[in-house]
Image 1 (tube, rainbow, N blue to C red):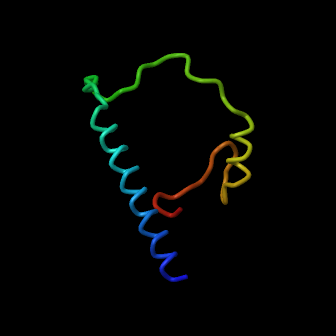
Image 2 (cartoon, one colour):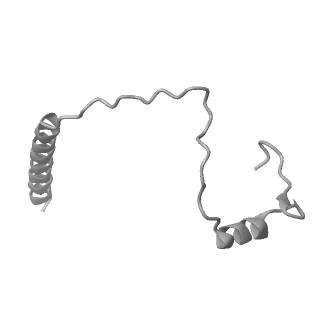
Length: 80
């Protein structure tokens, strides 16, 4: 019984090595183009219409906030 499980383990190991070899050779054939970084000036965002507000998200955020004042969430930096 011990010999059978040892043979089975060696067979699985051999199959795993073959799968890894095929996978690595397939990865070697992948061509990746270089991405050119877009140069941003000043680090400001472009003004625009923005996105539509998500009222459900806003409601959940206010429900989960430990402290709030009117329409604002009171939070401290690095306290979360």
